[in-house]
Amino acid sequence: MKTATLKTIEQSEKVGLYSICFDGNDLSEYEKFVQKFLNDATLNSDFQKVFRAINRIVANGALERYFRPEGKLKDHLAALSIDSKVLRLYCLRISNQILIVGNGGAKTTRTYEEDVELSGYVIDLQKFDKLLAQELASGKIRIEQNVITGIESASFEL
Figure 1 (tube, rainbow, N blue to C red):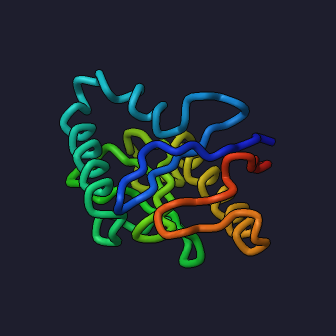
Figure 2: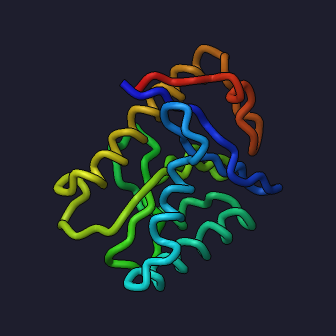
């Protein structure tokens, strides 16, 4: 079982950008993704597209058109919709104003379910999504426009 916390990555007028940290790690899943692909020469073009998409989201909000649904109908799982056949970044698009950015990688199989690494990232996000929904329903955590309040001291057991 993993313990997860939520870390603020960026806060703009349009969106609150968050990412998950596991087991007391200071580095979020999104920051691990950036470290993994920042200097990858073969995927640099795709990484730059992801980076530009994140900047567009910070400026305009987590609008639905920027994402491709990836999970089940009842969850918030999505991948950034970029012109890439290879690189995937998985997210929880909670609303136009709240985005939880996860991890991702190079997709070398037909579906993410066929790739152990990508499937692991997706499963973690789906579990976190369920736990976050429970906390929101209980009132321990609240979403106020582009901010998740009460998250500073919250931890989740995945």
